[in-house]
Image (cartoon, protein in one colour):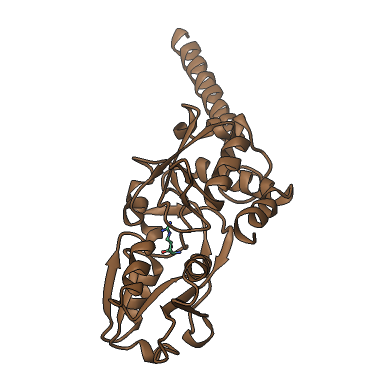
Length: 278
Ligand code: ARG
């Protein structure tokens, strides 16, 4: 008799536990069919979901030598479109943003350990997706080619064959020069600014670099450098996104929700006008 009572009690207890678990799991069930929460559900609720935001700080890595997306301002601190964007995202999430200037090449492997996320005009790329999870895309980009103003030889992809090509180490420009141009002598620099310097010094035939920074460097070196558009080179469209930790879908969801809000409320376009189209 006594045994039976205990059995029933144990059964009821496990039932309660099972039901309780279902209820708790239910709370975390995505409502929009994707991992994470519904867009718009930002603020402390979502921010609190990622343990990485529990300290109230979003630590962000960038490589501040890629204008207009990131560069060092007059005060020596990182500034630019990406910095303004990630600060706006931090504000939506109710956390402080701390930006660390690092080498571009070490950003992906630092995401999730030294830094929470990386924003660096970084192109979504399958190789990088082995290490990070990208947020939704926020900008469409394409590669361009910078040459000396008096260079008449380089006109298309075939004419780059066997040439000395400068790139920033680990960028998509590096991948293209390395993988797609036969016999190219690829010279890799820590920043695009250094590659552009060497192009001006006559040590390179061309620099392969994203269009917006290419435009900035061309404008800074009018009459010295010429910007060749993407048309004759067959470059593919690229998309910039924020690199997030692979093991933190809550953080990805928070970043995406904040990004969607900024796009919906006009802040995003305002930043494009202020930093990119100015
Ligand atoms: N979009 C290119 C890439 O992802 C270049 C990015 C370089 N960014 C930088 N902050 N230096 O590879």
